[in-house]
Image: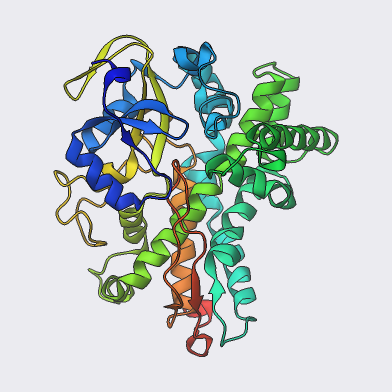
Length: 418
C-alpha cells in the first residue's frame, strides 16, 4: 500500500489522547496518519502491532533510512525534528546502538537503581516538607513543585551535574516536545537545539576539569581514553539521558496522581492494610497502562518492504506506535478506559517501549514514581483536586500542564509513619 496515496488520519497535539486512541483503533491495527507539518507515517494502534513495530529488526530508528529526511523534504525546523534525528543511541541502529547503550547500561541495572531508593525517598521528603509551607487555603501545583523537581534532582545526581543545568535549559527541552504557533527567535527549534548542545558541551568541559564518581565522568573517560564514542555522541548521550531521565517521569507521576484523585476507590484500595491489597508498584503499572507518559513513539523506518498487521509497508516508510492506544487495547484489556489497579493485565503495555530500544531508565522511572506516589499520599492523605487540569499539547508526550490540588495539610502524617 502506497502511504502517499492513503487518506490520512490527522494526529492533533490538542486532542484527548484516549478519544484519539479509540478513533485510531476503529481504523485498524496499522493506520496511515498525518503528523504536524503534513508528514505521513503509519501508526500501530493495538498492543501486538505496537510490539512488532517497536521490536522488529526490519524497522530501524536510524533516520538515514527515511528518504524524505535525506532528500530534504523534511525541513530542519520541523517541530519534531529533534525527536527523529540526533540524540545518540536513541536514533542509532545495529552495532552503533549496541555500543552506545553498553556505555551507560550498567548505571541503570537493578543494584545501582535499588541503591538510590533511600536517596529518592529523602528528596521526596524534602519536597513534601517544602509543600507544607504553602498557604493552606491555596492550592499547590504538584507538577511544578513535586513531580518536576524529583526526577530532575535524581538524574542530575546520577550524572553528577547540578540540577540548575536542567533548570537553565528547561524551556528549550519543552520546546522539543510541544508545538509552537510560529518558529521565530528563541521559539525556533534550531535555536533551541543549538542552545542545548552549546550548554552541554560547556558542562562536559567543566566535568573534565572536575571529574567525579558519576555517569558523566565515565562517559568522558570513554571518549578521552578509549575513543569509544565521538564528541558529538558524548553530547547527544548526555542530552538523551537528561531529557529522558526526567521528562517522562514527570508525566508518569503527574498523570497517575491525577488518576488516583479521580478514582478514590482505587486510592482506598492501595491504602488498605489487608495483605491482599494492591501495592504502590501495582498503581505504577496501571498508571503506565492507563495514562502512558509517552503518547506516540517516534519513529521507525522500514529497511525493506515488510508486512505489518496485514499491511504492506514500503521500504523507507516511517512507522510510529500509539502507546496510549496500545495500553487501552480492548482485545487485551477488559474495560480498557477504567483505571483499575487490581486488573491482572496492568503490565500489558509498552509505555517504556519494546525490544532493543526498551527504555534503559525504566527501572529508575518506576521506582521514582512509586516512591513519589506513596510518600505524597501518605504525607497528605486528604489531598484533593482543586481544578480539572488542562492537558499538555504534544504529539510525543501525554501529560498535564499543571496539577493544582489542596493539601489539606491539617490531616498530614509524618513520613516516619509510613
